[in-house]
Every structure is written in structure tokens, then in C-alpha cells.
Amino acid sequence: MNETFVRLLCPGCQKTWERKPNELPAHTEQFGCDSCATERRTAEFTRTDHDLDVLKQFQ
Ligand SMILES: [Zn+2]
Image (tube, rainbow, N blue to C red):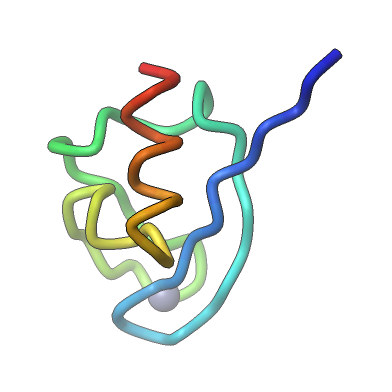
């Protein structure tokens, strides 16, 4: 199985973590940080443009 992960960075608390793209909302939808309850579009949590591309590619 080919496991692809999107690397995330919370703009509120700077926490970094990874999720499978299919476990995340679409990049234009709201996503909440587990640690600090910051809510932004999922696109604003992706760490790099590459991570955003991966997210879009798998949705
Ligand atoms: Zn946070």
C-alpha cells in the first residue's frame, strides 16, 4: 500500500503533525486544530505548497 501523508502546521499554536489526505476536509473547508481549537481553511494548515498539492490531488 502506498501511504501518502499531508504535513500540517497549525497557524495558531505552531503544532506540526501529519494526516492522510482522505482523513482531512477539502482544502476550502474549515478544519480545527486538536490542540488549540484554531479554525481555518484546511489549506492554511498545510505546511508547504507541496503538501497542499498532495491534499488537492487526493480529494
Ligand atoms: Zn493549534
